[in-house]
Length: 273
Image 1: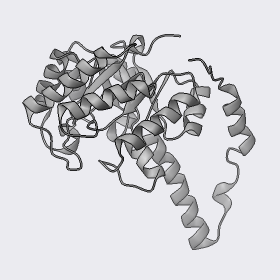
Image 2 (image 1 turned 45 degrees about the vertical axis):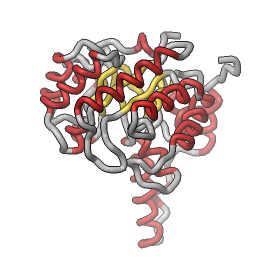
Image 3 (image 1 turned 180 degrees about the vertical axis):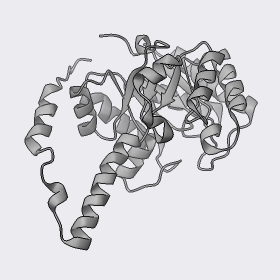
Image 4 (image 1 turned 120 degrees about the vertical axis):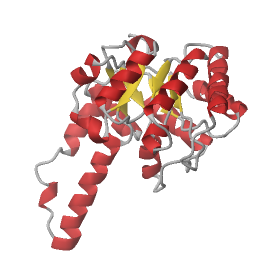
């Protein structure tokens, strides 16, 4: 099996499939995923919680462990800001993530639960601590450093690039600035750094194909909570028909239980992995 690190090839992106429970991880694996990721929002929604800082380190890592055990695929954790502000908090999270069986993770530069970014030098210090922790553990661990300020409207692409270059300078393995203003700006990000770049196929970027992302040099395409929200769309639309109109027809002609179970059966688990 190709290692998680080796999947990251600029210009030849793979889809990092974000799952929100063991069942969705199994289905994605059966249908061809090469690697799985957690989604902080998708996980939070399963608990009836809002995204952005409402999941604890313990909850996140236990959830990650469940996804690790669901398939033989590498799993990357969406670990938000590392569940603490200090560099030591982040380092502690990285070590615990490796112990949970994760092959890598994302760490963002947002001072959760607010949407404010960490000050530049402190953001870099936090990523440097994460990298040092990742290098101290046994086995390979792929750390993606996120510059989220473009997505949250707190800084522009130039600042995102400044941060990503600094994160690369302290050893980040993958770089990620979710949802820049355009595909062209995403291409500019890819050209500005040497490390592999992750793109988010959500919102206005969902209209692009894998080939479109390949053409601008992306190495990895993640889904965030987008796929989990497809299920919420189905629940909301069906429930409205059911409760408002007494109509159950939206349930007809859909995937049946046997088809789901057949996909589960396709996923073989190596208990010794």
